[in-house]
Image (cartoon, rainbow, N blue to C red):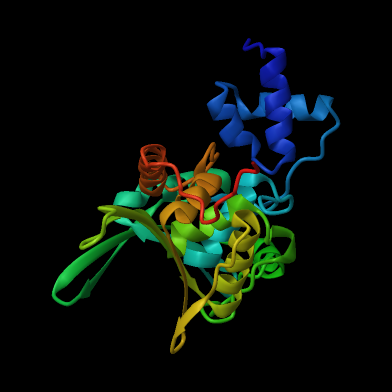
Length: 282
């Protein structure tokens, strides 16, 4: 019989009460799901409700978004940026190279549905995305409370409880943002860090407020017709990227790698020159 250490016992209880399902936890810890169920019963912990999305018995954790943990905040941000809600269906599609991130989301949701490939053609080129979707009126209703609804492209509004949450904004950047180190021709500085986010007016304004508060300097929204964007460069961008991605529990792998490159770039930069001179008294 498998025996848990005290640390594993505590971790299973903590993760289950945070919204994870018994079956994925059992697989991770090498246990039978029934054993996890008995552990929870001994501790007097109420079992999660589940919804069966089809006759094959696929499941999803309907309580995944009940408590706003760091990971929950991240997935709320990514879904607001790149997810889709239609009637009672929630879906997330990312490009083929990001399939591992889709797998992370499925694990977070405690889902058993297959990840499927979807191809589209544009300009003579074929693009492949991988997606995960599930049906749950309960999750759809909870996401609506958090500002994620149908046709959200121009109306999405971050929930008040996540306005200052760096994990939420990292999810937004992973979905609708860009970051990197770019050449800077005809300048003494050969390279520059740049961070951008596009989205609805409400989203971009809220991110600018978040960035302004952290950096203690104004960060403004720019618009072109119906497109709203925040663009930040140089040291302020590098500082903000570090705040968003350092010690991140969940992040898109390729953007986390870029954040690491930006951190190294920042270390190699010469000290900033002060704009004011202080006179010494005689």
